[in-house]
Amino acid sequence: MILKSLYLRNFRNFKEAQVDFGQKINLISGKNAQGKTNLLEALLLLSTGRSFRTQHLSELILEGASFFFIEAKILQNGIEQTLRLSFDGQSRKAEHNATRHPSFQPLLGVLPSTLFAPQDLDLIMGSPAYRRRFLNLHLAQSDPLYVHHLLRFWRALKQRNSLLKHTAADGIEVFEQEMVHSAAYLCKKRSALLIDLNEALQTACQLFSAEELQLRYFPSQSQEDYLAQLKKNRSRERQLGMTLTGPHRDDFLMLLEKKPARLYASEGQKRTAIAALRLAEWQRLAHQVEMTPFFGVDDFEMHLDADRQKLFKNALDDLGQVFITTPQTDCEWQGAHRLAITQGTILPPR
Image: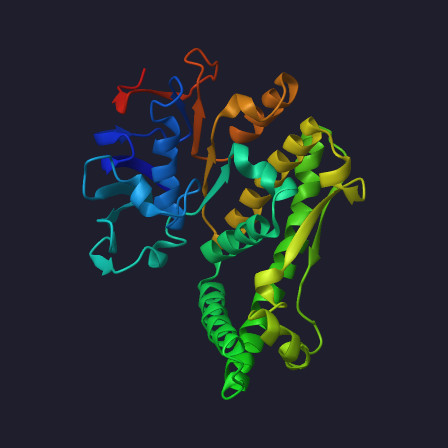
């Protein structure tokens, strides 16, 4: 899978921009607040249907405009395909070749990706919600049935919570049965994902000569009888108006030498651990989708010290198509396709 070109209109600070990409390393440079991360954000929006910086799509529309539009040309097995996204403040529209969709969700998996961004430290230090998003986004790109069960669980959860808030019991069993059915699938896939990532982490850790890393899954729901757990908790949950157990409360922890990295790892160790995790994620995703995902790195120099940067660069050279943002216009990278951005204008490659 190769992303050949991108066209932007009214996206962030880009009024209109057209850019062609190289098939290997794409180095996107420019001073702060010029649009480097905005360009990377557009690529990830095409891939995942969501921004990695905001939950509000309206923030992606150029100030003073009423919509944004993105178009990408991709090449898969020698055949060119077209992806289009647009948002006018109310409705989302997506198009893959000649097929149109009223949401971005159907594009999941068409252009698989992995992103290493500064906010990834939240995978260690942040709330469980950030780690659940990591699991969901990875699995959604490779397993359409996972998306089905995730949406089904959330719909049933919303209905159950509504009944709990109104202290009504009529019909609650129906929604609990749906939750249990979908939760079993979600838990199974999350557990399998973390097992695979733990195996891939061993290779990634050796790259950095780092300490042993391990991911440990903490499901919220009972593995044996989630339905009984839901029934048992009804009385307490009516007082709170919410469901306390289920995939929406799952978590995982990163362990460094068998100790929680959140408590025992230094800043450098944490960033190295996240780099290893993202490489392991890419490896696992590539295996699952049987194609080469693109790898994005936002603000390259921010993540690792000089020695580990060199090791990371060597790893990226073997990952297929890579998109890297950097404030350094003189960043050395042999063979890189170089782009520069100034005030929302993409300069020709050099």
